Image 1 (tube, chains in turn purple, red):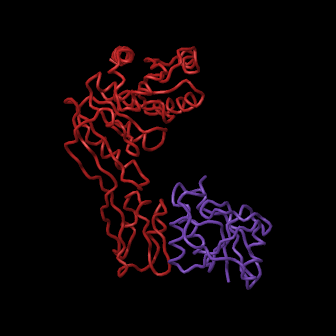
Image 2 (cartoon, helix red, strand yellow):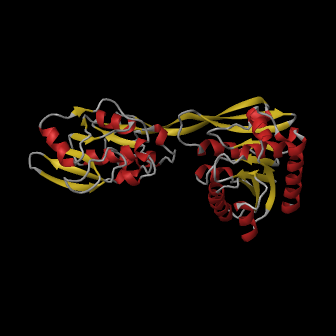
Image 3 (cartoon, one colour):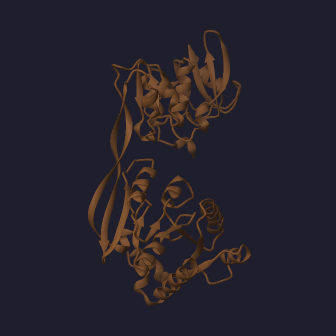
Length: 120
Length: 274
């Protein structure tokens, strides 16, 4: 399964970014190959609709799940419709969030956060 | 003559200056601050006409749609996205540019109108007052401001502009001949005043400054005017009476002390810009 995580950096030791649309990087993790890559979040620089741009990018990577802190209303409805699994995590690092996913200890994101939360 | 009242910093007193000056000079009052238009609270016009402002957004005919994503890729505003086997539209992000319908090879996009705000026209003691009112929840003020500014005609008017120096201010000053920059004697006031000065310079608008909530001292704004040779058109004193009148929706020029101040400003405006 391919998973995308919002991250502050480019390694598995990076901090998990609680923001989705405005995070700096995404870590795309492939659980069957046990490999990962880091990509820049193009949504972070968009003037508007950052969450939508970020969600587009996630879908382009063909991921089946997202792990982040919060999702805005637009990204939430978009990823829901695309049937991507949405997980919430307040883990400090990307690595820790992946461990929790493996142990099936992550909870599903229930509902969207406020709009523009990640801009503050 | 069309006079734009701008400030950079919010809360410096644009509406107070605009409403009082328009009444004193007998010019139309135009409230371009469509996100929070409050000038009518002071001028109390009787509203005679309401007009809808609409903007188009794409509707996708899913039957004709081949999911080619050409529309998603061309959209500069992230208003479109592919989710599974359908294209989702986020209408509030749409700028009505029409690019999506141009690139759609399957003829699956039709542009539909939706209401984004209204324009109200009224009269207060015979003077024309207009304002744009952005629909609550709408993120973009510019379409409503553009519609408002497009119907000003040839009348002299005071344009009560939004705060800041961004798109909505640029749209508001489109038809202005001169600008009055309202500021307050604080560091924030000066900082944002300098941004507003840069903006009016870009649009080659002659301008002058009014200090509101003035302490009467040789403050940061007075020093700036002297040092950079900027015209000072007048100063409204900081006072409890002004705040009281404001909070009761009263005009400052109804009080003798303030009427003098505004008469001086009006005279100065005529002298400097005629």
